[in-house]
Length: 107
Image (cartoon, rainbow, N blue to C red; front, side):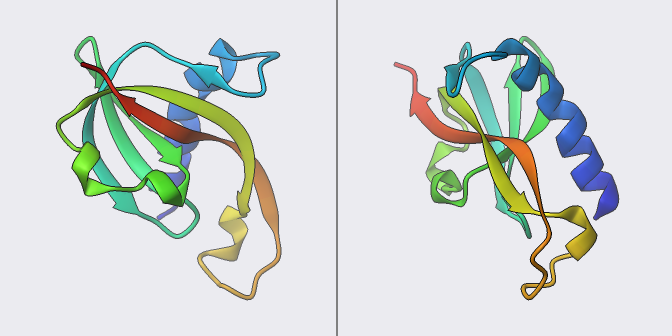
């Protein structure tokens, strides 16, 4: 589990750097490879220009109908349960991460 979260944090760095100063930002089109409900967020695997990366997303956009679609994404910083909680629902520790908050299909 720690490896997945670490990979998610690393893959979010380009999204964070791309939007410095923006509260919400839009990226180029991505191909959605997978979406999966996780402990602290939705795990979204995206591909762009042959590079595949994992990202954290808001639970509300964690929908299987996005798989296989080309989408633009909008991201924003949000608080999620801390990795230290290891999925314990009673844990109140949190951390701020970059989340995909909107995916819009590209036609």
